[in-house]
Image 1 (cartoon, helix red, strand yellow):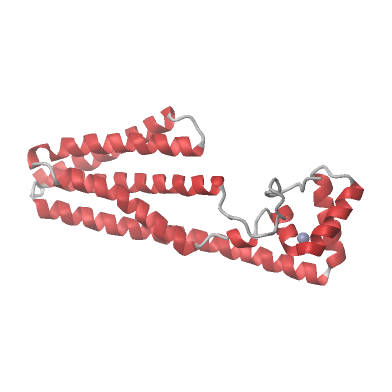
Image 2: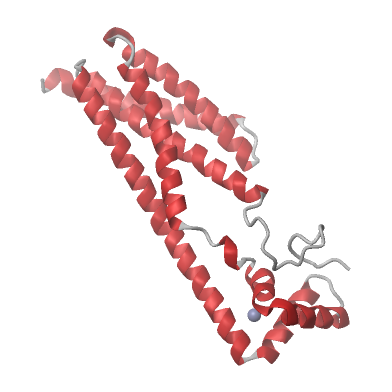
Length: 245
Ligand SMILES: [Zn+2]
């Protein structure tokens, strides 16, 4: 009889430590990375193109781009840290609650587990037997998996999430920095536009593929959105550069 959850194909017990980040988990990380890179490309490109619209001097463009890169990376990391921390706190609270329920009312918890198993298609008799065996083996792991769909060792680490998103943003941000700073001043803006739009098309298509959706529409959206952002900040920079300077 196959256990109705987790990786039972290889005959593992569901609560034994196995590589907790499966393919889906890895794809999610990759997708988060691509989206973070996307953010880095758009926001830093918009900043440097805006400044380059106002001045052709190298230093202000470099300074603004660096400030945007560092500020953006920290802000992304902070946002991710806060959201993953609160997710972790609520998962820990659920685990603690489950643990105390198992200690204080084992009978009801056994009934509950039996109910969860019948919901998944086992007959009453089989469900009761499976529930009893799972409870015997590792009650907490069985309840976490069947009731809450979590395991104790795949609780996300907020630091990992924060560092990963800061790195993704930085990788994205480096592209517009190079595109605006390396070419001669006369062509730096068109070069940056082209480089950014190509990069956005790639990240847009990759993000869609990793998310399992068709690539064309999201790619068009992200490219059009990026082009609008660059056009807007370039217009503002040019306007300020000619009127204020
Ligand atoms: Zn329970």
